[in-house]
Amino acid sequence: MGTATFVEVILSILIPPVGVFLRYGCGLEFWICLVLTLLGYLPGIIYALYVLVGR
View 1 (cartoon, rainbow, N blue to C red):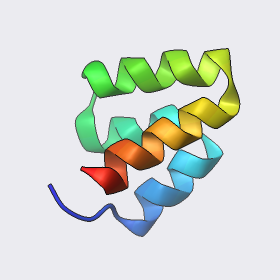
View 2 (view 1 turned 45 degrees about the horizontal axis):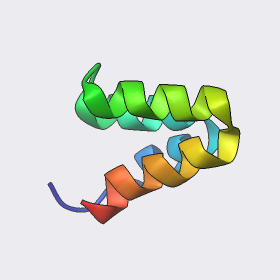
View 3 (view 1 turned 135 degrees about the vertical axis):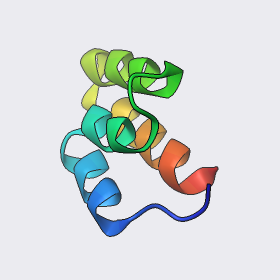
View 4 (view 1 turned 30 degrees about the vertical axis):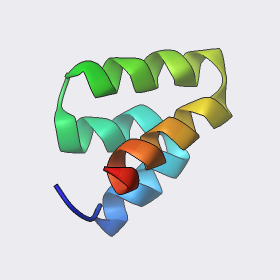
């Protein structure tokens, strides 16, 4: 678990749950990102980038 690919980062900005799905599948991270994106687009982006780049 290191760096996120360019495609994952771009998809995380455009459609946050898709970027997380590519890395983790339908795991807990995906569902958290989906709920945050539905509640507000910006929280979904922030969480997706945190999960992909921050870990």
